[in-house]
Image (cartoon, rainbow, N blue to C red):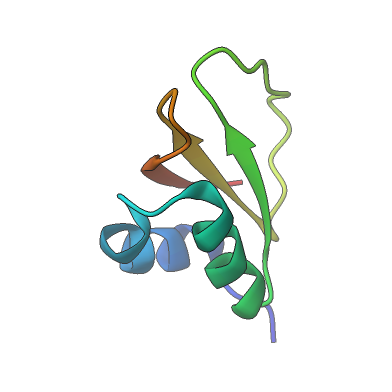
Length: 69
């Protein structure tokens, strides 16, 4: 069964926002998804991966948003 990352991100965003990036990455991995960290000055590709969640962080590495793909 493949998880819908849009639904997963929306459902779990409140629990992940405010966590350190490493802890949030672990939660994503436990759900069977991939993650990537998007810091303030990090360039990202625009490719959408249905099995990935993007964790946006502030300069100190705290998650500020959870996005699909």
